[in-house]
Amino acid sequence: MDALRLALLRAEIQRQAAEIDKIYMKIEERKQRHDPASLESLGYQLHNLYCAFEDLLKIVAAFFENQVADESRYHAELLRRMSLVVEGVRPAFISEKTYRLLDNLRSFRHFFRHAYAYELDERKLGIVLEDALRLKELYPQDIRSFLEALVS
Image (cartoon, rainbow, N blue to C red):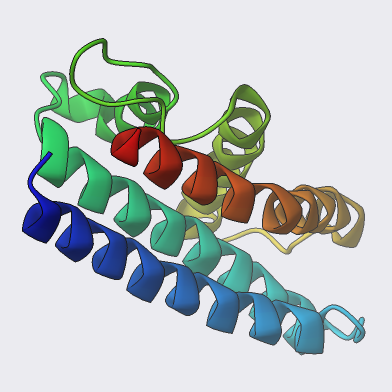
């Protein structure tokens, strides 16, 4: 693989990971409070977290393949595709565990975007938060493994 292109990919991934980390800092601040406004703010940050992860996936997809045929299932298909090894092209970008956690977060993002008339259930938000915090522990290793596999 061309060293310049790989360096650019690495830099873009690291920049997006830094954005994800900023959102995690906001989540940490908001998770301590339990008033309705703080819960909505936490929900908004969890929504933003998935969007930031999806932007990370798009960086990788644009570098390697950048085509999702079924536009109606774009978000789910992009996520699924990043968990696949594409022989001769690229290793999987995310592990199966990360895929499942991101898929749960994707479902929440969809709900949050379309839940105009619903109040957030603190218990359900807690489940999403728990998944997001587990994801925080997993995704850096996925990135390291992916980049190491590209070099070897």
